Image (cartoon, rainbow, N blue to C red; front, side, top):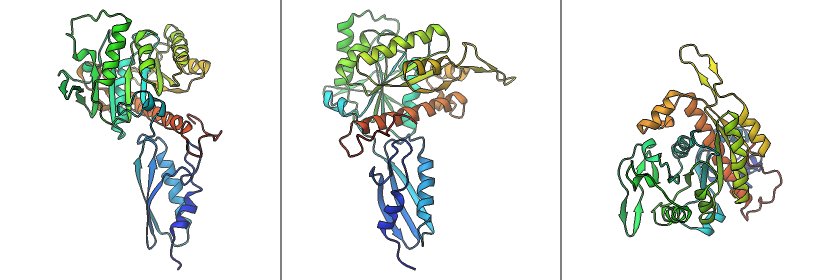
Length: 364
C-alpha cells in the first residue's frame, strides 16, 4: 500500500467548499497542521469565527473527501479560529477591538438592550473575546441585565471594565447614581462615548457589541464619527409602529456608511406553556417583510418568553439562564449569522486573492 502524502490530502480538501465564502478550504488557507500517521489523517480547520454555524457541514464534507483517498482509514478534524479584523475600524481607532457591532432600534421598548446583552453573551459562549459597551447614556440598563453592581477600577490611567460571563462591560450606569437623570446635550455624549472607547482597557477583543439608545440621535452619530462601526443590527417587534421606525434606522446607518448586518424581530410570538398554543400578540411576519423592503437580511424571530424578562431583571440573560429555551436558541442562531456576516464582509475588504470574487455574499 502506497504511503498517503500531504499533497493528496490538500488535493482532496481543495474540493471542500466553505459554505459562506463559496471557495475551497485550501484556497482560503483554512487547512492547518496536517499530520499523517499510517492510515490516519489529522488536521485543523481554521475558522473565520468560532461561532461558525456551518462548521459541521465542513467537517462532514472534509471527512468524506479524505476517506475517498486509498489507504485513509480515519480522519480527525479539530477546529480553531482566527477572526478577521475590520481594517477600517483598526485604522480609525486602534483600541484592540477587531469588530464593532451596533445594536439599534427605531423606537424604545422593543428589547434592544436585551438583544445586545444576549448577543454579546452568545458570541462569548461560542469562544470569542467580547466586550459590551452600553452607549444608551439616557437609560443605561446593561449593568442590571448583566448582574454587575461594582464600579470600574482604574489602572495606569485606564478604566478597567468589569466582567460578567466572560464579557467586558462599560456603561454610564457604573458612573452615575441609579436615581440620577443624565441630562446631556450632544457634545457631552460625544465626549463620554470617546472616553468609553479610548480610556477603557478593552484588551484584545474579537467583537465589541454597542447598545445604542433608541432612535436616530447623537449617540449613533458620535459612534460613527469616532469609531468605524463594522455593522449594525436592527431590533424591532412585529407591530407596524415599530416596523415603520426600522426604515428610518436603516436610512440613518446607510447615510453614515455603516453596513446593515440584519434585522431581528423580537417578541415575535408567544407560546402558552399550559396549552402549547401559539399567539401572535403583536402580529407576525412584519420583521421579515420590512427587512426585505429595506434590502437587509432577516436574522430571525425571538419569541416572547417570561424567562427573558426575568433574566434581564435578575442579571442572568436568557442564553445562560435557560440555554435550551426557544428564545435562547433563536438568539444563539442570530449571533452565529451576525458573526458569519462580519467575517465575509471583512474578507471582502481584504487584499487577499479572493477579495473580488463576485460569488461571495454576506449570508446564504
